[in-house]
Length: 167
Ligand SMILES: [Zn+2]
Image (tube, rainbow, N blue to C red):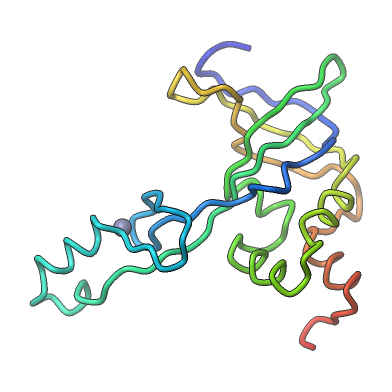
């Protein structure tokens, strides 16, 4: 794989790391925050402190979750691990990381079940070499599910746990 050049390939999704599937960022500037629902962004809060007079900036920032999932995939020639960030992961999950996190709080086995749901899915992935050359894994910049009738995991999960849309 050439450095800096995105590569597209067809893979089978083998497994996802269920223990650590998201991280917390500032909802305004998306800087990474400590993984604690009450953590605040020093940068944005400092900004809002300095610009009290402008009403749009005067409220303090909050945090949100973004997906970051290590997944193991198989191409026709090898098995390897990639890291999948929010935009690509949402294609598989069908919801935001916050929605999934809230769902998983009520249904503790959601992450493991999601792993089972998505295991074996054929996906077309676009991989890019991280700009930081030290990073260990290729990152997935895009995922396209190939199976006809693919459904995002959250839909199957809701059905699995007996929830109907709107109920
Ligand atoms: Zn911020």
